[in-house]
Image 1 (cartoon, rainbow, N blue to C red):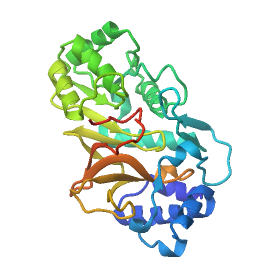
Image 2: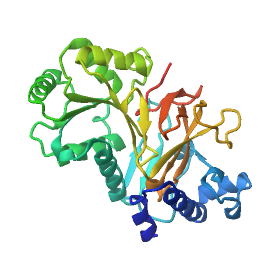
Image 3: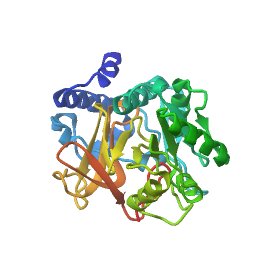
Image 4: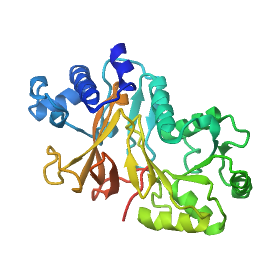
Length: 327
């Protein structure tokens, strides 16, 4: 088991990814009673699965109604999805929090380089009022690891944030601003400033706070107000321990231990070819202690370079706090 965990973040080829994925499927089939029951209901046995395309993807909604664990353990951390009053929250029981830390630190380094080169600012007001946010956990750790004296969270103090942003931009200090969509929109409508040297990282989360806008509409507002050529995005969720990042044009890339596959809208057990719209399935090997094979409620498509776009959500699915709802 320990050797399998060590393999996750050392994957370099597609063949290695496939081999580790099948090993983790085998482990989770045997050690996750809820996932095994799901596979049995689909009449899928271990012997039936010889490629990753044959692995059953577990509906993400089960994280709301069941305890999803592979093996018996007392969790070090429980992450909770955000939700309005009355909504059932997803629960992700994390056996080893260092696995999550390794995942987001390695992914950030892969896409953005050494965190110590950055000033990390966070405009995440709705999340700081509650515990259990995986996003807040990640950003808080990145702020600490940056070691920059101006790194930090900003709730309602927009004026202080703006002054720091202006100074960082003028000094050409590498800076990244994480923000939920509605808070970035508030900032963009109130201030028109040059942040051409700042990475604007939108993490989703309009969630009924403002009129729903498409990601393109939002990003165009940010670009105009902040004078940036691109707006970056993070694709993550409570039920995953890994994130994909978009550095331009809304096209996401995954780290080497994460893969997105697109399922047929009318046949959820069939994977569609590139450039076809369907439901987003995620293989997240960092989820070894829960379930690594997740069928999300997001709609998207892949292109020919293993990149993907998020196009919206299935009708009647709950809003997700950390992902953009596309109208």
